[in-house]
Amino acid sequence: MKEKNLKLYHEYTHYKNLMTYIPINYCKIQKDDIWIDAVIYEADDKSLYVRSIQEFIEKFNLKK
Image 1: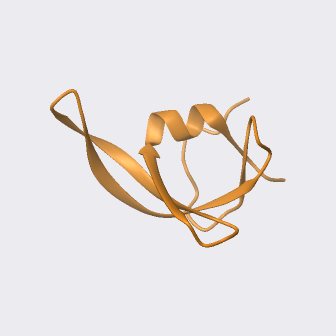
Image 2: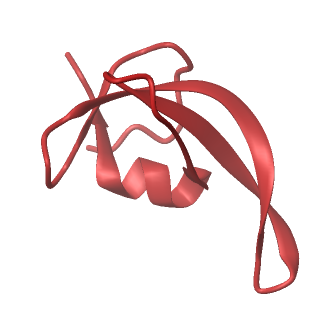
Image 3: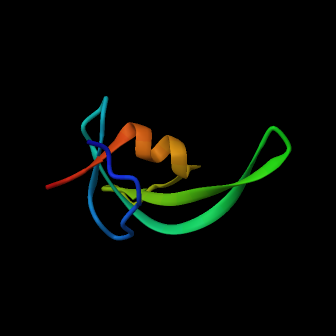
């Protein structure tokens, strides 16, 4: 079962590449000219990425 709420500073695994990422903050991004909720997350190499919260929940699993 998928986690419906993100947990900042917890480790998540990407469903495809199996790499670990950590959500570090929330933000807004534009999608089809509408502002939506998003999350900024960090890779092991300290690279930063952003996705909509909905997409993040769909593609990442909380590490146990």
